[in-house]
Every structure is written in C-alpha cells, then in structure tokens.
Image (cartoon, rainbow, N blue to C red):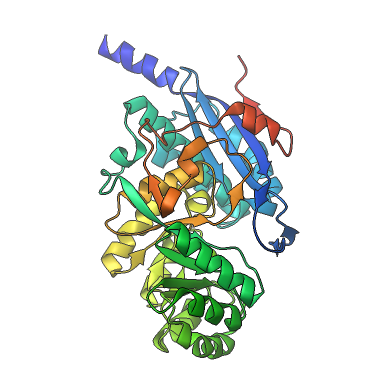
Length: 382
Ligand SMILES: [Mg+2]
C-alpha cells in the first residue's frame, strides 16, 4: 500500500508543463534612461518561469533579466524546459545540478545559468507550497520578520540630481543609499547632502583597470563609502579587486559570479568585504552554497537584488534567514506590479509575505497587460 502511495505521489510530482512570461512595466524615475547592457531601460522587465506538475502543483521563478531576457527566454524554451518534462519536481538539487551538468558546454554564466536559476526558484516555491510552509521556513527559519531595505538608485550622471535623490531616499526611511555613479563628483555631492552619518555605497559596475580603480578609490575616500561595488574590469579579476581592497577600500562583488566555485575564488583571494550572490542568476540552491562558503571565510553577504518578481521575493526570504543583512531594492516607482504590496517597502522596511512558498503568485491580468513577448509553452504529450 505504502509503495503504491509512493508511486502515485511521484507521478503527481512529474513536471508536465513549463511556461515563460516576459513582462515590461513602465516606471517613474527622476533621471535619464541609460542603456544598461546595451539597451535603454524604458520599462523594468522581468522574465517569470512557471512550472506545473501532473498533480496540479505550481511554482513560480524569475530568471535574469532586462535586455538579456530574449536570450534567457530562448534558453528556457528550447533547452531547459524540454529537459524538465517528466522529472520529479521535489528533487530540486538533482534537477538544478543535472541541468547544470547537461548544459555546461553552453556556458557556466549567462542566459543559460539564469534560466536554471529561474527553474530552481520555481521548484523551491513549489516545495514550500507542497509543505504548506513559507520558503524561509524551508531555509532554516526567519530570524527577522521585517527587514531594513537599502535604496539602490539608478545612475543619474548629474551630481545635483544624484544628491537630491539620495536625500529623498534617505528621507523616505531607507537605512542606506547606494548610488551607481562612476564620476566621484556625484558621490561626493550625495555625501554632502546626506551628512556624515548616513550609510552610503557606490556601485560602478566594473568600469576600471586596477590602476584606475586605485586612483578612483583615492578620490572617493572623502565620501567614506560603506562599500565600493565592482570597481574592476573584468569581474573575474579577483586578484585585482583584492589589490583595491588592500589599499583601503571596502569592496563588494558577486553579482557577476555564476557559481559557488567562483565565490570560493573570490574569498580565497581576500577580494571582498561583502559578497553579493544574485538569486535570479544562480538560484536558491547555489546561493545556499555561497552562504556556507561565506560563513566559513568570514565574509559578509548582502545579496544582489535588482528584481521585482519572484527574484525579489526569494531574496526577501533568504535575507530574512540572515542575522543582519539589509535587502536591496531599486529606488524606482513601478506603474503596476504583478506581486501587489509585497514588493513595496514603505518607510524602507520590507515584510515577509505569510503564504507558503514565495508567499505570493503573480496576478495574471497584470502579466497579460504588460506582456512584452509571446508566452513560451512546453508541455508533456497527454
Ligand atoms: Mg551591482
């Protein structure tokens, strides 16, 4: 009898349908629409992955992102989704490691890795729903029910505007402000507007040689940054980043690292004060490995989170299991959200949704209204 029940359960957990949903949502922001990754951000785009089993269980994930979404969506629709059909959705580690191994020749970082991350998040969401528990309970329990959020400002490229918006974010209640200014003038203007006590970071997104980074870090010294994020090109140059850190800058990096092994190299080089795994790029399973490595190396983790979908919710649950990390949130106002109030952080404070799994499914009417490209569908033959 037990054997029969077990077989039936396995049948119910077989993945029968995978769909991919690309939404782009207009947003308000007091600055120019810069090109990021070669394309202007006229909307904030998200790629959602929906996985369904024979027994009707559903999980939602998110795969990075922005202008790269068509490439990630193609990786999902043509390679990853067909591989998933018929697999037992409860075997998350076997699925994500199996996918990574089966597809490794197509790249260990980039669209395919993001696609696998989206699947991994969806399977964790489903595991929580199946257990009737929120994701953070599956990850060891929430140490905090409300989380401080730091405001991550887009690039203004204009010191006066940068200073004005940094002060506005601080006045909304955010615990810290992160800029994306390359020119030290904008950072110094923000520091002046915020005063000496505010927590201020700057993320420059890998522009400089090591020599340039050392010089820029020197110019930035009066800004007393809490961290300087990704000063060095290429992001794989962990020895170069370690030199910037040895010269006295607090460094943060990790959103461009595709594997736990890459984080091990970052820690081994002594390159980062803060590690920033990005859940919609590497998934929850791999992030847990990074957390273990970081704990052993004594490195602080503050996840990268430029997300407004399941990637944001997964980051929220992960951060809640940590003792002190803040949650990153892009400081923009979306015209609408498929995830209702759970993506808002009024007063710079985020709350955990109470439902099982990620705690919140997307509103299909909003996904419909803001659909940017045809929904991808991969199904088992009935
Ligand atoms: Mg960053």
